[in-house]
Image (cartoon, rainbow, N blue to C red; front, top):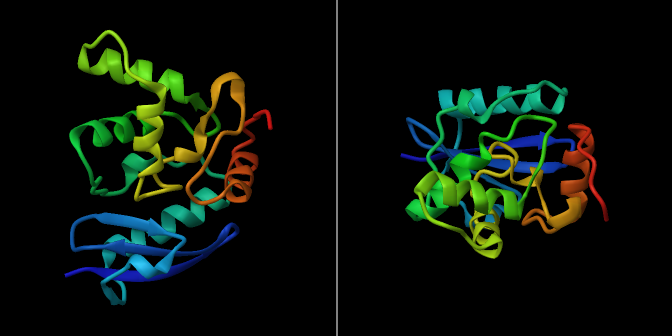
Length: 161
């Protein structure tokens, strides 16, 4: 069974989705959910994590039970992204290079890494907002640039417009 719970954050209302074992999604767009409204232990832990995050605490995504959806490539990119500490950033190119090293290939496209980042079903928790374009430029964000700017400001991460 799947449950959803609303979470009111400084960047807007979020919908959290979990099953018995793991957090499955964090949504700004609630239309995608096909779950029962309610709560369970996983949703409670996720809400407490978000409270700590928005209070400025350097929390880690590894503190939560997460189920990362997608291909092995996408899951590896998002696992690498979970290694970027609070208050730090990485570029799409650096993320692609880290992936290439992890899997033992000569190179990976920054655009491919960006596609995997853009498909993150657990934004904020898996910190896709910490990924910047080349030269530290803001780049894109599936939840909108205004939200990305606020999350980067919360973590005191500098970027270029």
